[in-house]
Amino acid sequence: MGYKIIEGGVTAAIGFQSASAAAGIKYKDRQDMALIYSEVPCRAAGTFTTNVVKAAPVKWDQDLVYNKPFAQAVVINAGIANACTGAEGYGYCKDTADEAANVLRIPAESVLVASTGVIGMQLPMDRIRAGVKVMASGLGEDLEHGASAAMAIMTTDTVKKEAAVSLELGGKRVTIGGMCKGSGMIHPNMCTMLGFITTDAAISKELLQAALSEDVRDTYNMVSVDGDTSTNDTVLLLANGMAGNVEITEKGPDYEAFKAALHEVNETLAKKIAGDGEGCTALFEVRIVGARTKEEAVILAKSVITSNLTKAAIFGHDANWGRILCAMGYSGAEFDPERVDLFFESRAGRLKIIENGVAVDYSEREATEILSQPEVRAIADMKMGEACATAWGCDLTFDYVKINADYRS
Image (cartoon, rainbow, N blue to C red; front, side, top):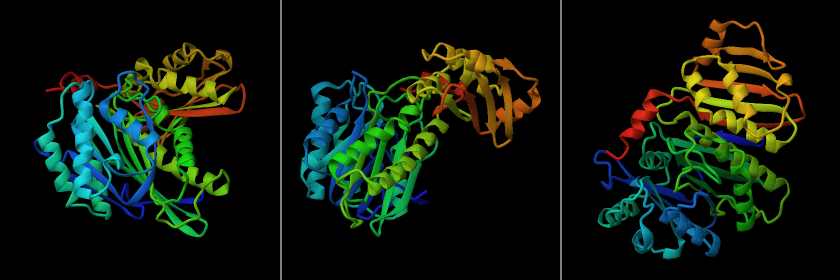
């Protein structure tokens, strides 16, 4: 495997600290701001929403990631998204960066910002500034500080989402850690809701961006909760080089090892988002094997994972395989439905449901037991080639509607 899964999140890597604060932006009973800080400047990479309606923090971060030499801090708030807020909202990104720069004694152009929450409301800058000051004085590098930051960025999330791995590069121990938030309005195109990855690896900015851009296609881009691509989708990856490995400046064994470890962190976080979809009771994984091309496998997997009828069947623990075959049929990918085999799988067992496009004599009771687990997998063998793809989603429940009907109130 080349890497080891370890405990932690954004503070797992050397030189990274975090803090959180209860700023009272929207929530009155919990922490709602987080700060990530590196002791030294970092190479920065990022991926961002392709929604034409982009939140002010997305525009701010795109400019810094693409045009500035380094980043050193990220300020995040939950409760208000700072989206559809015009020039005033963009100005508040600068005001937030200026405040952080002042208290951390770093350049304002090295401060990234991120927001999540209700669209259309302006940030209460007096509370934002106060929160930044509190966090700057409360930074810590232990795992508890990282966990508190992961909790502070939640909106409708029910659990914090962290992951970390370590590996050896050139005889040096390198760590990659991250946190994310996301539960609703999840159908990424380029990345996820909000994700923050930190590493002490020494790697060039170009290869850092290449690794992230390539990996989101197989991780965050393969997640869907409800088919809605957010205005705020952002993944930021910061590398401060403090592990002391020889800088990765070209593709080779060290780069591939770094990419594999990064993939583990990103996939873990992506699955945690899918498994915490608003109101859901199960993580639903769709695995396409035997496809002609990777592109077709991706299309097929995402078509099934976004099918509301299929998601409802998973909620009802109903082996309604016709909905899966139907979703594959309208995906746009070409295949022969009379060659498809389909299986359901969970910790309760594995069961073949159809063979060559026709139902086999399976036990409905056994199928229901398999589909009643907290993690459920559908595997479709197209028997057309060697390509495969995996997508993650969740079931569709009554609570999803309740949560989103009352979100602003």
